[in-house]
Image 1 (cartoon, rainbow, N blue to C red):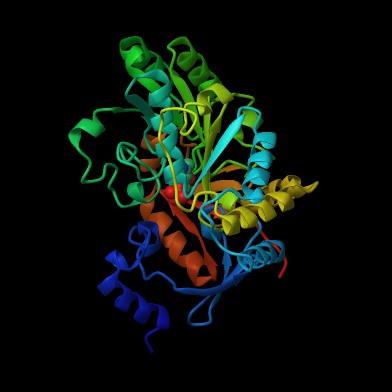
Image 2: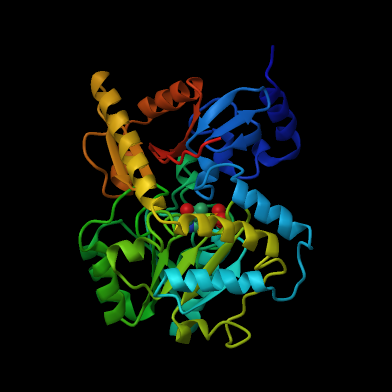
Length: 409
Ligand SMILES: *Cc1c(COP(=O)(O)O)cnc(C)c1O
């Protein structure tokens, strides 16, 4: 009998491009049909055919507490019952801004938006407004959402579909984005020596997550800080994944590096569509209505989304949460390494707290070029096999990301 997921997918393909509302969901890079999900609780999800899975994807990052966490559901229900949007300020937005500015010393002021894409797009506009320069530096394999000009050598779904640069972006925009290899400070120094005075900002995932987890080498982030400061450019940390993921704060907290602008998303929305960008006061004062950099949103700071995000952040702030996440990450990675060794399969499990990726490779990848040389066929086999075992995982470039949150249910 043909599964309900399959039937729904063939219907969906007729009226939704590729049958999905975001490309990675289509399983193109790994083969097979996407599963239609009907419910989730804690670490488990159930598809429309009634098959249950241990979910390591957790909505690709936002659901750090797992599915339908009681505190988050309660907050959403309670808030929605009093109205879902007003187009006027609410107290919840103030509370959210308070939590973010408290957790990130580099953020004196923060503006809420509706997605990570919007956060990065706005951060770049802000950097250009502050510096009066146009060029942006990004790193190959890093993903910063789908704004024009950031879809160059992009990671995430763009990488898995081999569309590193999207069609439909004017040459003139592409020319404003300069791409460098991750973890390569000499290349960055050389570029700045040549064109430093044109560069508005360097945009980086402080721990790369969208080409699989790649750790910044000692001196990489500090090097970027030094170079940008020397040349009057801004340093933007895209912490859409790493924000509140590893510690209370972001990767900048972990590495003690102060960026000029920080982008947030995913976790701060607790499963609802939210993003944010922030920085020190004199930078954020360029944003309208204070300054001349325009950025707006009908649903920005939406009360229901704020309530879901706040409920999530309050759970995370409780003592011991991150220690528990870290120890579960370590346990899972060690288990995968042991299993691989037992089966005589060569893997590199790159981990940082609850972020990790299994690369089918001998050496730890340091940049996107290295990721691309990992064994993709072995990876597909792994993906399919694990799915059969009842585990849904995230494919990332040539590796696998496990999201290892487990909540009781
Ligand atoms: C997910 C992600 C984005 C884009 O966020 P959306 O909410 O999908 O628009 C941007 N940057 C990074 C690092 C991300 O992981």
